[in-house]
Image 1: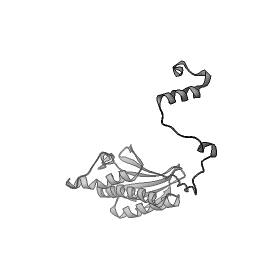
Image 2: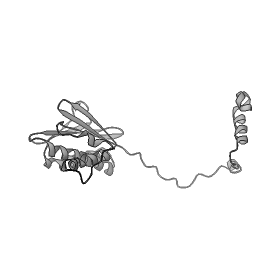
Image 3: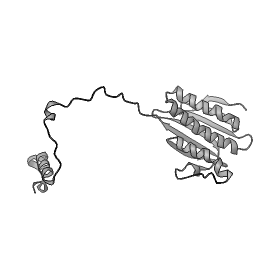
Image 4: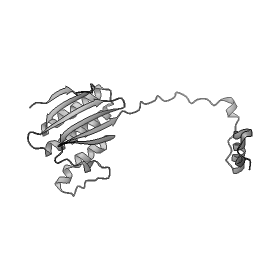
Length: 194
């Protein structure tokens, strides 16, 4: 059955793509995520990181799925982030690879090296969540929008004339007590008067 891109039911801002869980769909799925990221105004490097994380998850699922398995990829544009939700079969999925303390050793067996892509995907996104739904898992990958860069000031603000006459002195217990009394005024608590 071919892939079909449709709007996500109920949210109005998502695009959903149902794919066969096969290695041949990995690159088109990543390209879709990156393209949607660019279309919604995500910076290229942010959209690419989310696309690479999605690619690693789908590649793992494609390598582990039984023939005829399907993966659904849904992209959501949110105000402060872009989200990709990947719905996949729960069998063979290793959520332990998404912990920040997990590590994969090159000397480990082939099964651990198969999980390396999941470990990389976990570090490419800012947030993720798992939702188990019967025999399927919805893995949500979130990449936050970066704050806009501020233009550098052309010149440093000039120091106002009255402030230029002030001199800073090191803090001493006596000066701090005087400052506290002056700041509190006549209604100073008794402990400040000591």
